[in-house]
Image (cartoon, rainbow, N blue to C red):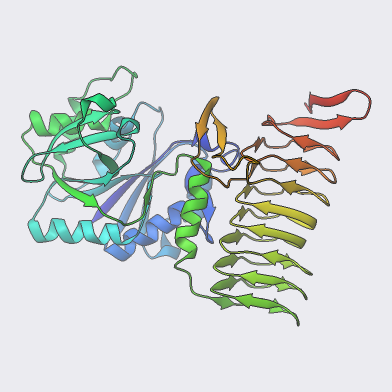
Length: 429
């Protein structure tokens, strides 16, 4: 069977993480998000994948190539304009065989790989041509909600219904099985009030005008996330780390203590006095220690230096340094960041409340008691700085010594405490 993955979006709500890379290439637990997905599809029996690409597509093509190193065939089509999910799906028409069903999914969906196998087994056993996956959610007003008939067939899709409508809590989980009739439905689809061609409108046409039955598959307790917010990357990382097998390919000095499942890559050196508690994934060519404390659920990519510092439940991208007396908890530190001695990131409010984060100029409650900072690429700090919980530091910004960061910092900023003038904020450009 073939699969189509819609991977053209930028992931604006994940800024500054997506400044240097498209969302599908964000690494968690040793691999980009999209690689985890592709390997899961391959293991389920998919043999050919079409990626609909757009933002920074050259990086996706360079990384995945034609799929040889993953044992699967990969092709690409560029979505020239962002005109909605139905518009993106229409690009796949020449890739899909007329008489064969195919799997379609959104590129920002991240799930337990067993879900793909469950779906393919179900459609084969019951000879199903069209299927939509569903997930029970706590806040139906945030999702497209699906209503079903007594036979489990899709009746209607209601986008972000108000609570008083009481239409249930089964949300569209973004993984579908279609046959080629979906392309006729897309041709009949008109632009929505958002001025886009919506796949949910095409599905409505498929049901009500083209008389195609669409079966449902409810994802139970299996992991599912739409990875639309930065802390969801931390959640996905934890899910994957719980499944890793320990392996040590680097060099471990004397007087190092490693417990739990810990992966340590090639040419990584763990220096004396270091404690590592799994599950953790530490990539290649890193220097950890001396006297570092790596707590559970950390992913440290490649070419990093973590010295006499403490890290817990965090993602550290490649070429980043936390060399002296740093604390990083529940945070994402992007590539080529340098935290000077004594730099600390707060991850807990003094009043023990949940942490709000400014996402795309809208304050969002993370519903988390512990959440640190999102630090963009190429950020540098001076000594003894403190970043308060939930703050986002834009790419290429520098923070001067002895500075308290109690607000988000835009990209390309000099942000420092002047003894005479107080807090200074000015553009580096």
